[in-house]
Length: 253
Image 1 (tube, rainbow, N blue to C red):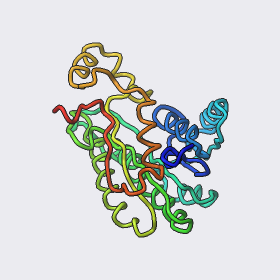
Image 2: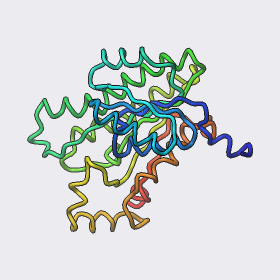
Image 3: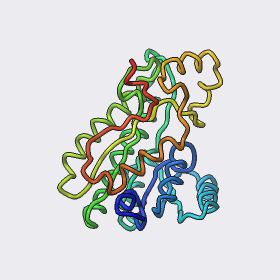
């Protein structure tokens, strides 16, 4: 491997991916592992976690799992206390529920914001405390198009994902002296278990595709290159940025 390609390698690095049992999180875990990282995925159910770890090991990568509810800061601290210092944290755990803003109640708001924003902060904090003793590391937060544009029915989700942008900026500025880089990825339209219901609507798909210059929805593998890059030494001078992987959607509106 030449010197340029070596900068993109994650060989020898430990990576924790929250919400890594399915969808985007699982794809990112597989991508980082194939780039050489030892991956740890978190999930809330042991059976789902075990199945995902087994699936990762089938592609001949080093993978393990840890039970974690990111809405509970005390459980986050307890989980990280069992880990060696990670070199990489991917804050992917998230939830979404479309609901008209006039109908959003406190329970819905709390569930979404606690998972997407509070959980990301306390996972980042716990990881940074370990990274700071180990020469630094890279944190990547999973944002969204709703971090940038308004989507009807996504008040709580959009608020949480917009908050992640602010969090990325703040932590990148504060933790740079610790050797910790903090960036974010903003996926465009990707079909996952959480969003599949939208893609079953043919009229919605036609309307959305007309807004995407590349003319297609994202495939999960389209996100792995961005994550590998931001976590690698190739991005060692990049922090505080949000990289939107959206087929050109934001540039065209």
